[in-house]
Image (cartoon, rainbow over all chains, first blue to last red; front, side, top):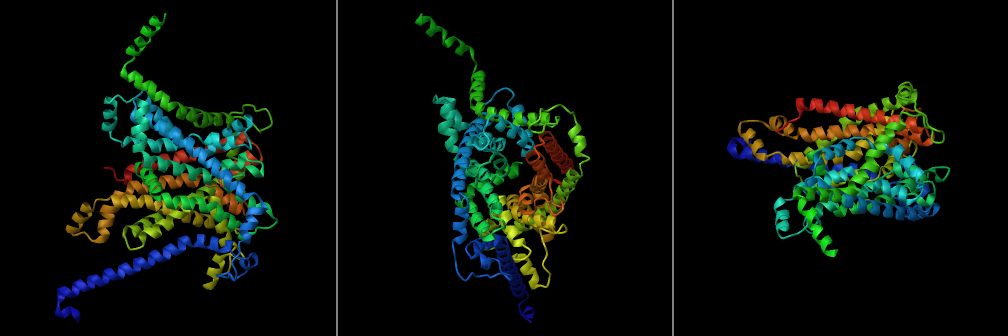
Length: 290
Length: 306
């Protein structure tokens, strides 16, 4: 009917209607997707703050009748969970500092300086990046045992002080810094170290934060290596402690496991949310150049 | 005396050219990194290859056995089982993850209001540690109290032992892995989508191409490098799959979810067969190498290059 009077206008309004419809469908799709994807996290939090007897009811009670921190207190007292968090913080921070230092210095040499065999050496670096970490698992373990480092912080930290991946990532960032700035500084009489500290590092600030973040989160979530080099409960990092929590009692106390998971996830989620820009930048850099 | 020294000192410096000086400085900057590389990466890699040729059992004195470990592996039914399981995981995970990632990226690219929040939510799983995630999903999959069985019960599907039934266990692990990785891969594909020049799409549209044609002829070919990256990386990471199995199924039921990495862990660190475990690691590397190599060979057939 509308179409007969103003064909053009009718077409336009039909077009608008279609647009509005597709917008609405997409919005609903987005909402459903968001709910589905975040559901496991919501379920984790919900299960961590309810009474155990209410969690073990079928069909599930959606809204607990009372909120309780009993599971958190349980997780913190049944084993030294606070100690695990401190262990993880200490280990991850130390590794992060070491990795960023070695990676940025190495990347400076690879990206900005010329020396014989540079590109060949870098190719060897790239080649070893393809070798899965499982290959070095046994020899690293043997080495660490020989040195008597099992169940010490050295076992966590020393093997983590170098990362070919971060060296690669840092090099990609440093390649993009314009040569002119360096040349200008050199004419002013600045040496290599001075250029590195006063020109390169400040310009690579975003890259440094990205690398630090990737490194910290990598060691925070690392599981297999800490698992095989820890013996005593006092040396566990958060993921190892969490895995041990599962075996602590004769049965699996799910609300307590969920409380432990919340405590394990909270630090990295906060870290990620506050620095997500840098994190995504790191992903895009490796993703597009890989 | 002092005069002689002062005079002789600048002499070698003058001899050193700028290029030489730069090389020495580079070596200085590189030393900590190179030391780490040699001692923590390249050294252990070579050491691992040597261990894999011995029958070392941790406490015993190792002796050289050649490729015996590798030959035994190829006849070890549990290893073969783990290899088959890992391949099965890869075959299910890679296409699911890719389809999910491309769909997510296309949805995010529409820039509907609220996209940023949902994109962030989808990205969240990848930053979390696998152990927490595995616990959450074990709880969701729980036979008696799991919310999944509850939801399926609403539509009349009887409860299943998702992790305890050999028919479902691997699929359940794949689902959680797709949930964890899809958002990450989507971000990579989205970056490529947003890098497609709109001028090209406009030009095609003016030439009379419909939305579908614009997508299949312009957009899709231009994002193939990102898709290639996702395929290569998702294959590599699924060949190393470990934590999910370790926490959620322990490789069971009846070895139906034991992966190569899990087999390696058991041999090396439960049974202390260091030589045997090292050869497992090298077979895993070989698998990764072969898959990556095939991908690079096929690359020319379908990946767009400028």
